[in-house]
Structures are given as C-alpha cells and as structure tokens.
Length: 219
Image 1: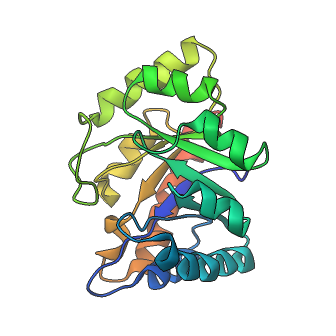
Image 2: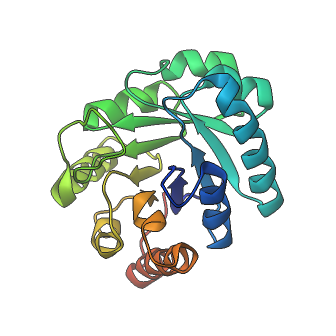
C-alpha cells in the first residue's frame, strides 16, 4: 500500500465538480484520492468513478471510493473507505479480498482496535473540528484526542496508518502531524483556496517538513 501522507476527499462545490476536484488534487501532487458522493446512486457514481480511476492510475495515485463495496469490486478500484454506518470491515474484506485497501472511520481508541482486528489497512480518525461535509458528527477530537489515540495504539502495538480528518485547515496541519498521526485528509481546505493546486502543494510541503524535521518513524 502506498505510504499515506495526504488524502484528498472529493467534494462538489459551486465552482468545482467531482472530477474537477480530482484533477486539482493530482495536479497539486496528491497521490491518494477518495471519491465521496454520498447522496448519489451507484449509476450516478459509476461513470465518475471510472474516469477518476483512470486519472489516478495515469498519475500513479491510489484511488478509493467511499462506502460502495460492490462498485469497488465491480470496477477493480484500489479500495474503499467505510464509515461507522457502512458495511462492516470484515464483511468488506470477504467481498473484496486481501489485496483491497480498506479504511475505516474511527473516533475512539476502541474504534481503532476494532478496525485493526477486522483487518483494516488504515484509519480515518476524526473529526478534528466541526465540518459541514458530514451531517452527523462524532465528538470532536482536537489535538489532545489524536495524542491520546496514537499513544494508545503504540502501547498496544497497533501498527496502522492513522489519518486525521474533519474540518482541518492549512494552519492546523503542522500541529496535527506533531501528534503522531500518519497523514491528513482534506477537502474544503483545498477547494476553498484561491489557488487550490498551489494550496495542495503548500500543504504537502508542510507535511513533508514535519516528517523530516521531526525525524519521526513512519507508521
């Protein structure tokens, strides 16, 4: 699995469509894209997923889709991200097989442990702060929440990439990385920027600096 540093989650805005946002992410250097089209049908998602998958493969990027396990299997997509109300990770693993990348949403250390035992490949952990991209939010974590979860993972020997998500802005990235998480997931912070491609490049540089500057061992 590609080393996770920054995951971009697609989001349609008045200015950009889903495929526009994929192009922006890839042009800015992001190599991990999640297609999230929560309120659409599979028939609506399928053509977008096919095109986004081609774009990501051409760029050498990992491409995953939110929730839609059957569609991921049908199209041979790299993997799926599963929220708390989606298909259980263990069941998705049986459907998609060992090679599929499967991520799970977590808000507590107990969530992380459960996902680890169910063979998740990575954790999307949040929310960091309030976000408008999700209707029902779990309790906010903040910096201390990430520190607590990362500490608990280390104490239990859980070696799993953990990605901070939820209302994260560019100015939050450095401090969040210092909590010990593996990466950051962003959406609005990129698409709302005056120059989204340059903003993506800037944030990737911040993350890389925190990794090399702090000499942290990568998960």
